[in-house]
Length: 87
Image 1: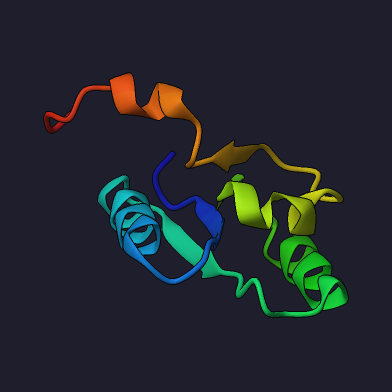
Image 2 (image 1 turned 120 degrees about the vertical axis):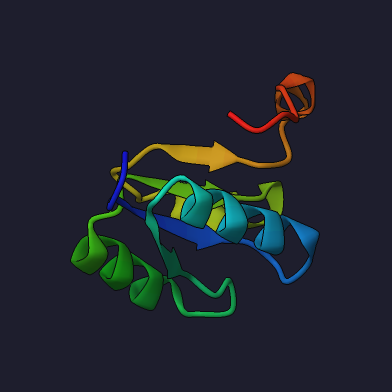
């Protein structure tokens, strides 16, 4: 969905770069959520930004347990089977 906000709550690394590029390539805007933030801060940012979805890793899923939006776990193996070609 173009112009949609997508939150991303991942540790620094390749998943962060891939997630940010995917959001931008899809025409969305990203809302960075640092896993080091207190839970209250993450909850406030999710409520205030109203993202369409949240990208996360297995290590950060518990920080998003109260999220009322779809959470996409980037560590799930079924993402490995998706097309790598440009959509």
